Length: 87
Image 1: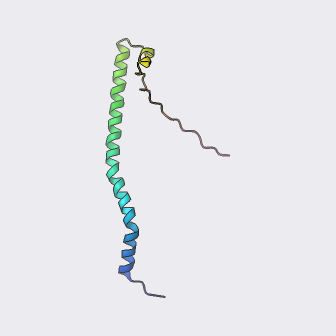
Image 2 (image 1 turned 45 degrees about the vertical axis):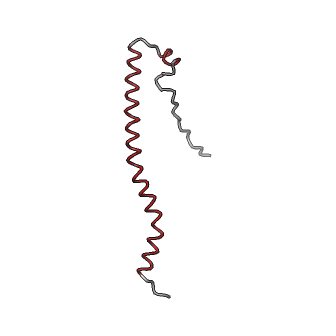
Image 3 (image 1 turned 90 degrees about the vertical axis):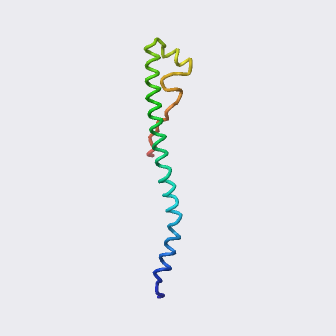
C-alpha cells in the first residue's frame, strides 16, 4: 500500500471543498438582503392594513374598494398547500 502524502491529500480536499465554500459564501451574502426585504414587506403590509381600515372608517365599503382594485388582500392570492397523497 502506497504512503499517503499529507500535503497532497489536504490540497485535494481543498479543491473538492472550494465550490462548497463558494456556495455557502453566496448564501451568507444573500441572507441579509432577504431578511431586509422581508421586513420591508411586513412593514408595507402593516401600512396597507392601516390605510384600508381608514378607508373603511371614512365610509368606503368593501365592495367599493374591491371594484377599485383595493380590496383588503390587494389582489394577491395566497396559495394553500395540499396534503401529500399517502396512497
